[in-house]
Image 1: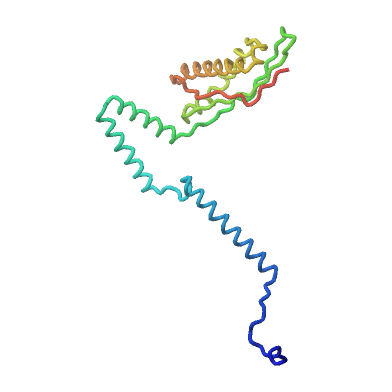
Image 2: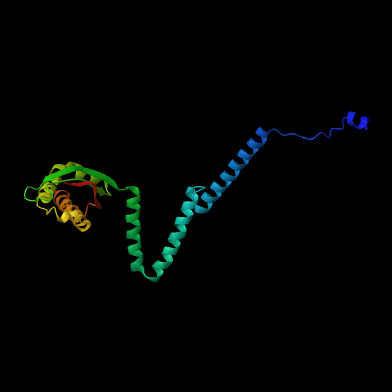
Length: 198
């Protein structure tokens, strides 16, 4: 028995350090997490990004289905082409936002609301219209100040009153741009960036 204890057979129990185990666990967890993230992105269609060839093939497939629809009713196809051109224009020019700065209006005849301060920003789809808004900003601000001074401040307390004011502001700016640059419905949207009533 003493000889068995002295013999080195290479059967010593392996002892791994706890640090090695921790590193293996961390690396394994990171690998599994990366696999899950990339799998999710792949199935959502985000990864890998579409190549130009794949996008062209998808576009060709859409056009073929559009040609079949054109055989059914050519009038519908004309509207689809117009819609497609409008979509292409919107993609070429993303909407831009033009700030009209803030407006401060004092109401002397109303004891409940004496001051209204609001920031207005407009959304336009065409860069030429954005330039026209910048160019005619003094006229736009003047007309809006006069219009805002004529408003009933109590009506502006409600959400409906604010929505109606947005519509009036859009109509006023559209009227100015129609007169100045002969463009109808130039403004896509009117947004309040601040609305303070005191």
